Length: 140
Image 1 (cartoon, rainbow, N blue to C red):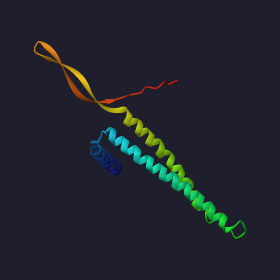
Image 2 (image 1 turned 30 degrees about the vertical axis):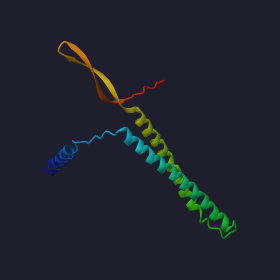
Image 3 (image 1 turned 90 degrees about the horizontal axis):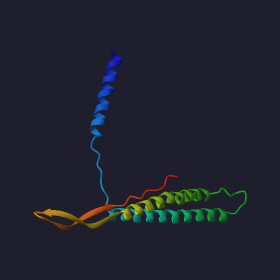
Image 4 (image 1 turned 30 degrees about the horizontal axis):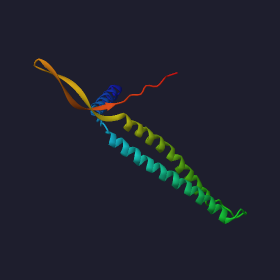
């Protein structure tokens, strides 16, 4: 009897969780949004890379200024490790910035001619369209 109650509660819980997850919001980003996103990611990547290199140099200079004797505790070494991690964080930011820039290049606005019927003849009307370029790659 106890097991049935537990299973019933779990089934109801699963249904409630599933019922609340039925409305995903899909937002379509425009070309300007992708370009702005790529620019911000590129700026963050350069800041991360520059800051990381600065921390690496500062950490090594702290170690060198203290001397190489027995009293050296490698105080600046942790700063070099954090700088290396910050420099490594810039790599994915550069990659995603490039992907967003490519996405922006594949989205465009143009006017397309549409033939519409009118009584006994057809006339052409320019209609604004959003174009999306899909590039197929060889899967060799």
